[in-house]
Image 1 (cartoon, rainbow, N blue to C red):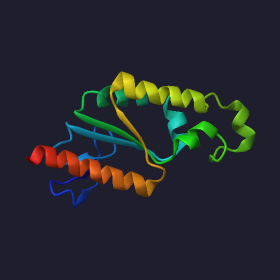
Image 2: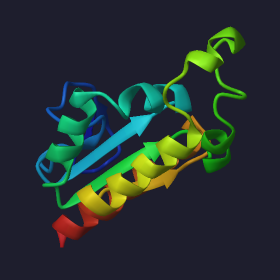
Image 3: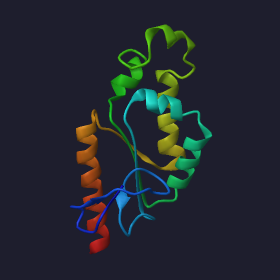
Length: 138
């Protein structure tokens, strides 16, 4: 999804990398979001996700917005949509996810933001886009 120059209108279209950007600055800003710990847990071992991170490292501004808290990761799979009977079969648990988040920040230089929920994530994404837009407007 990209926002136009005024950052007031939203256009829905496929981006090569990420979920959100600004029209005309798609090569500068990349915002990827994850809606749940389960989604992130499925992604952290996938080659496709690592490919996304590799592409994101080349953006001037790259962010991973998490629509949950660090506590949700620490207690994962408690409170998740993963059925309790599957918990013992899970290969990815909280400590490993936290390790990967550190790698994302250090190795790829991507800002990871724990937003708490989707409303906060939208608010933060909008503020990031406004800041980046102002940076290039001046």
